[in-house]
Length: 435
Ligand code: LLP
Image (cartoon, rainbow, N blue to C red; front, side):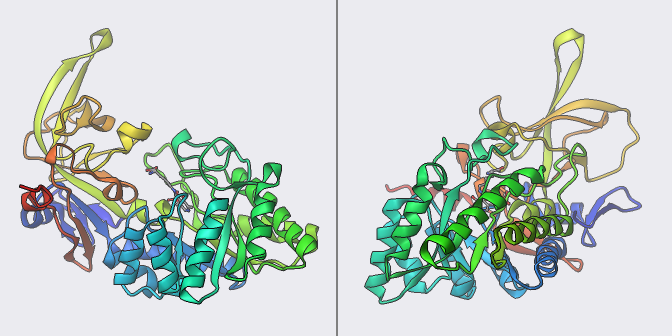
């Protein structure tokens, strides 16, 4: 995780900078991102997969976890590819001058304008998610006089062990074309028959925040089975296969993250074994980690505003600690019942711990950042709190609920802090109102 440690003065430091200095200069709340940590993890994935697949692998960073121009540049500089899932993310990638052939576009309902832009830019892969979309992408390719490389997203029928909202390969959900009932096979025939499209491979993404590699194993085997049938039925050897993302990270000490090297070796083992059994060549393999690269790189720095002791069941007391952000910068606790931890960042303390709930400043009681945490009993207004593991799906899912401006993202590196996404201002908030 981040190179965070406590100095002799008890103040938390990241990349050589104290959180006091960060808060004084840039204000709170703020996302504090350790650039070296983010990039090291991106490179670890790239290197691990290159080694496990003898150079025959690509890592696409899933920008939905967190994307801005600086991050897109890092990804390209460090030799990764970039997975986007909307016109907006594609716009960031192009602005950052990520080479178009290194960009992928996902989505179950890509707008015609998004497809058109992607094709016009010459992006490397569009992942087709429905029958209807096959024609849409083909029409765009014809309009631009190109042959568009595409993947087909396959629903492999795996029940991933994760929250229902982020589980994506069982039958009854909106993504992909079903392996069951021959729907995916029909899509494959349809794409192969269209001269404006070039089918590069099949894709599967089973869900997010997954620890159990068995789900990935079943998905890979089913996808490779279909891949082999394309060769048998159509005489076409698809050059690639994409196993998606979803690799879990440790938000609290209850989980062990999936290490890139272990994951790469396991997936390589499964893929190579299965290809041997099917008597087919091993295709080029890509994966799409988002959370596992971005998540651990960042903590959110909040300032404590108020404290309140409330009597709870069985006569206990819970201390409600209100901070200057909340569900607008981290919706994950409210939405997925996600677990976070939290630490007093601006000083050390030997005071006995008190059971606390860290809540935001929004006007609903579900506005919880950290459900349960023991914090020093002398915690007081003005103290800084750090919530680690907020690099994925926090800033990217942030809202302006209650007209609370969204926090900046500050990249720390070699003792220097650089704003990579600036703080939203009141003018930003008012700028869209007409009259
Ligand atoms: N590839 C595809 C096609 C995806 O849909 C996703 C995530 C990823 C890759 C990256 O998954 P990751 O490696 O980050 O788990 N907002 C939710 C997570 C939604 C994930 C959506 N798709 C959360 O905060 O937990």
